[in-house]
Image 1 (spheres, rainbow, N blue to C red):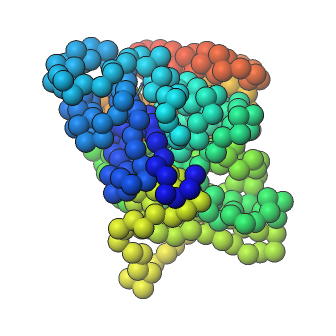
Image 2: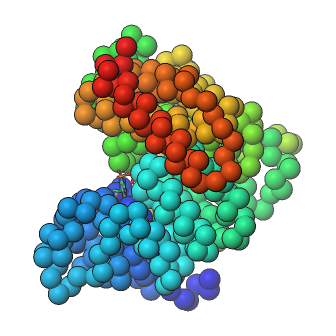
Length: 391
Ligand code: NAD
Ligand code: MG
């Protein structure tokens, strides 16, 4: 797309942390971007503001019960309002959209984002659970349709940038950095009794609740290893994780001659979001510059999978393959939701995922329906464990 033409975008999950940051970038460059469609779960107060500011042609709400209220509140200003999965798919495949920003949290984003790929839309991908649940299938579809898939996740954006102009066969390994979350220095005994409020207090990033808990358990890094496996087509053995508490080096690529390329910046998702929207150009964002002379320290260490079992579970699921990562992801979504409702303890999150993975009989994935069945099965098993009281 030439820089002087307007790119039209659909945003799936516009009321979330990534959705809001995306709209901030859009608002800063009105001559470059126009919003065609927005989707939200149930936050109609925020969606209403977004509709008034960005004038989408169509919106979709996951929660049908609030549709009438939104319609009443907007009255004459109301765009078309759709609901359910069909509504999400219509927004994702809107004929006027050039690019879809996939920023729903969890496997709920899989069907609409896959539909967007099938409709030939370029994708800015934040929703990592899609690649965890259906990585190979999704990447095959991306290749078949010839669409552009640009990562939004900061680590994957860093790797994408560090791979530019290089040859794939020269890559020795990818190194994903991880802040280590709020419990980086806690003992396993301490982790027994962590409180929800502490788990929600991420040291460096402000994000949605689910990914914030995933960061505290380090499942987020596990999901990102699987995401990297499919985005960059490298086996797990070539994907390492380093703890880097300052979140300045967003990730690195090591080459066969020993050279290591990295992308650095302040921890603000607007930079990778803007890059995904504007690639291969860069937008003149008004970001606080990174002042390395004022960074007291940049440190790196190895992760500890004894304390952060979720990271090990993700490598294990990737090794098993087939429907196993989809089931792991589903169990994690249910366990995290239960932790957020204070129904289970922090360490019961990996315990539930382990139990569900242990009883899963993985199958090879050849079609989307198998992923949806596995996802549903994983959710049911995890929910049953929680209802029974886990033990
Ligand atoms: P969030 O919880 O803040 O927002 C999620 C959005 O999805 C909201 O608009 C919500 O209404 C919508 N949504 C939730 N469940 C839905 C459902 N069942 N059907 C339809 N819509 C639904 O989440 P977030 O932090 O913005 O994260 C979004 C995705 O981006 C996640 O996959 C996350 O891992 C990834 N990501 C986020 C960040 C970040 O900084 N927040 C960074 C990297 C990657
Ligand atoms: Mg990330």
